Image (tube, rainbow, N blue to C red; front, side, top):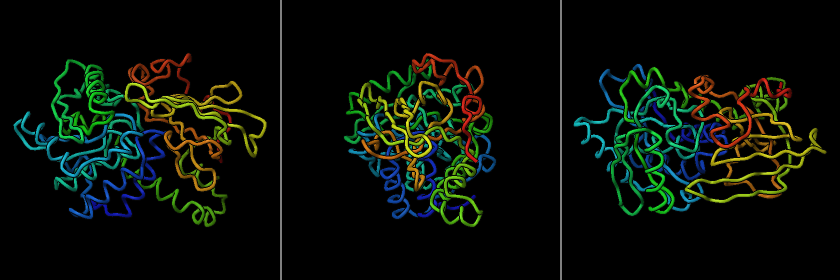
Length: 367
């Protein structure tokens, strides 16, 4: 058990924005929500799954919908109490702890805000090790866990609880409710016992996010101490594969079905001058193609970062003329199983390719 204060939140938000693979919402919005809750209610206790009593219930808190819309609406201070109360009454027992469902700028932060406002601990586990656009796309689905009862609420106070026959049905019905309510909802779902969380969760993800955020924040000084360039330090610390470095020459983006869809085109700079790349996304980055060759696809992480500061650039912040470096990171090993590929592999998203791990596709691994 340890406390999460303001600096820890800052680093978690930065690192989780990298693991969000372009999605998961604006880290600034999420950070403000979490910091506001901690300033008002005090620091959050973060615990490991082994510190949760047997028989206790753990429930993630998250947002659902298009990140661009969430940035306009935000999340209210009283929504978490209503959500957790609905599910607690459904089970007839209290929720012991919360946790993130994914790593991302907003959805790594909302459980911190929920924990602070409800006075409960947050578990250092999530269900993705990154971000994905649909709510059934979690490792708990592979383990047979149900997304429901799922509680939802919008900023106007409309709320409800779903009980569905499959997690894909939860996604489809909740997506329709999201659209009806204006494009974004605050939700609580995948309420689970400790065994499910222990067997199918991605452990240590909040700590990993914090470590990544600290490394990005201190990249220049840490690189100098290690005798490396900042880029070499960043690639070594993340275990990343440098896919491409370029300037954004075009961004195609549309909001459809409460998702942000699009494609960003890059003209090569530095060592990639004369080459062209593009990255396709659905909230999160799905594929990276360089000079007609696929270098990475989902479920591996494709992250765009500022080439000088290594600050992650989410899909809703992509702008003409901005310089970025495309980075590939290996996904959580459960996503590479047949069940994982069926759930989040490239063909699910309409990409005409089989999944090949980034380390096999990419011959340009960083130092």
